[in-house]
Length: 97
Image (tube, rainbow, N blue to C red; front, side, top):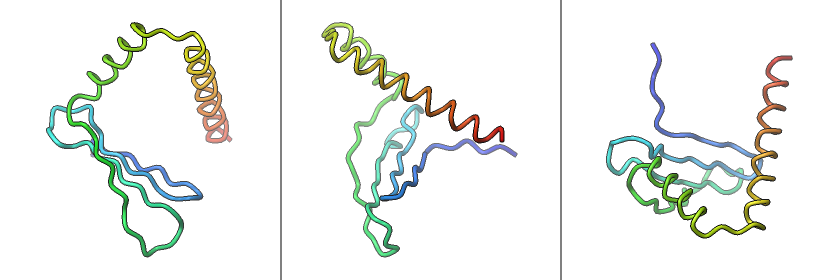
């Protein structure tokens, strides 16, 4: 049986970030929690997140970006996208081995 996940956890060398999935119709499901450091005894740092549809937030951010076009920012964002794609391809190549 498949289970729908409504959050993501990223674990790194310096801590953990957990985010609640905000692209649902369920109210108040979005959250961000950060654990800094590697110690097992810790308190989560909670960050307030606007409630609403993540898809709407994405569309609004895109419209704002178009309205306030900045060429230097655009180039930076394109470079970040290329870096993201490169990272994803590296991960896929590792998985295939």
